[in-house]
Length: 93
Image (cartoon, rainbow, N blue to C red; front, side, top):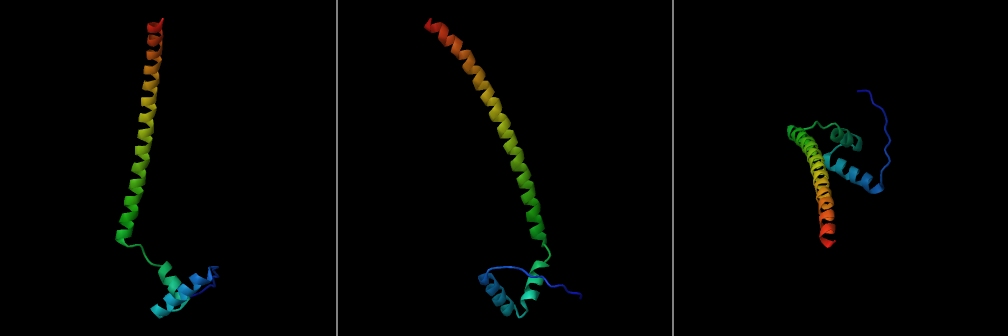
């Protein structure tokens, strides 16, 4: 396996955590990082990602629909108020 060096800046606390995790797993810090970063997405994670994307799409569509409905209600209220004002002015006269 051909290798290349990668330097990553992190906090001392995170570095220490990585060292402890690597020691607990019985591997080097580099091996720990490689194996954790190379993990494949499980079927459950893929399904969850798909559901999340679908939910975001639906929420966006609902927001658009609600905005359109609110605009329509506002227009109706504006029209009703404009009809009500002249009638009220005629009664006062």
